[in-house]
Length: 266
Ligand code: ATP
Ligand code: MG
Image (cartoon, rainbow, N blue to C red; front, side, top):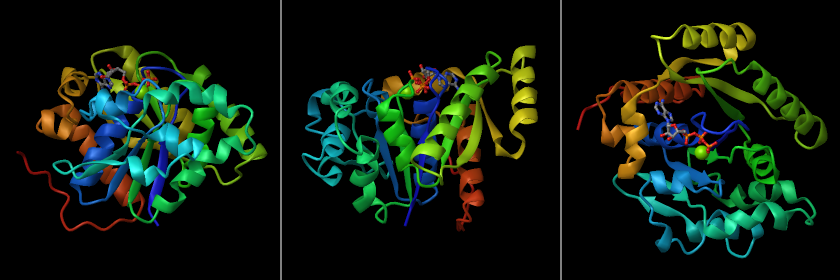
């Protein structure tokens, strides 16, 4: 049975999608079978992997609603050895459509059930809200949520709101929910603010914070326009090294043994 993690933060633009793509790419690089789930109607993860919107016949929406199994819509990138369940355009209506359904918060969890032993890692990309789609993402995250935190403003207020929501979910539907880790993103060592945020978040969340810190780099921002993860677009960049380091940290934390963790350059 593989591990499922969901990237969640109700704040927009903190690096959820960038992390799904690049952590996913390095986990695949290190030999893991990886499936990404695009649960965001913005479909950024889908386009970051170079999937053309016009070619999508179905995806997360169809799997959620149950009109066809998720497996029918999974696309595989043989070069990256990575698979994605893309966000189909209809996903935009899902939040509203699901409201009247019974057990609506468990639809994604059920849809992913037949896939869980086919992949070592399933990473779910959520929209920037705490609505029904994100709730579905959190409940499907059997091994925990990963919370990216941008080192660009003091995020503790937002994080305590998120913590409160996670507590509510634990009490109401999913007692086993754990935080797999807090990830510091967009770190700029030249600013006092970035250093302050790192210190503050580490003080507050201690061992829950990943050692790996993702720097703010132009290369990470550029890669999506080429439909490539950083491991292909700029494998020697700081951003690539940071996401490779995060992947190693996740694998080691999960007790996955690897033949070699060295990164080869293209
Ligand atoms: P949303 O909530 O809208 O889905 P998100 O949390 O998924 O946003 P991303 O889309 O990953 O955030 O990142 C927001 C923007 O910042 C994107 O344009 C992305 O390319 C850029 N970005 C992400 N991480 C970095 C980084 N470490 N350095 C520079 N730019 C970054
Ligand atoms: Mg996103």
